[in-house]
Amino acid sequence: MSAAWATVIAVGVGTVALKAVGPVGVADRQLPPRLASLLAMVGPAILAALVVSEAFAHGRALVVDARLAGVGAGALAVLARAPLWVVVVAGALATAGVRLLR
Image (cartoon, rainbow, N blue to C red; front, side, top):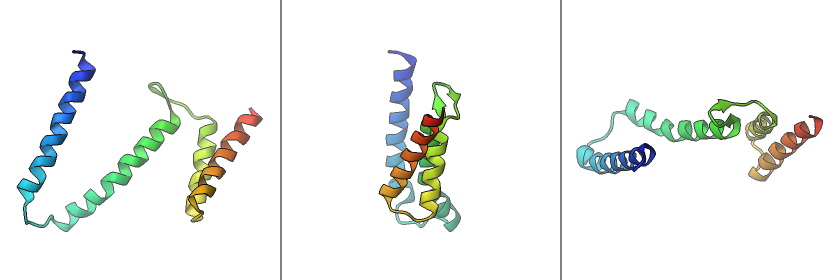
């Protein structure tokens, strides 16, 4: 077994263990408000990290190219509260436009 597979299995076992311990350890007790608010931010933070790594990574290096324009246009459309299809089209058009100019 390679080191990568050993790592995947170890992380899987750790995840299952943490998911099992959570309900058993916390049971009927309430989490402190500060911890609950921090836990609520974990999902969006992980999603943001995945978007950045997928949009700007090439192998083990960060690359700034036309995808940056697409992500920026999509972010601006989100800030403008545009519908999802407008966000996607804005990102695609911005990326295509920058690639056309190169």
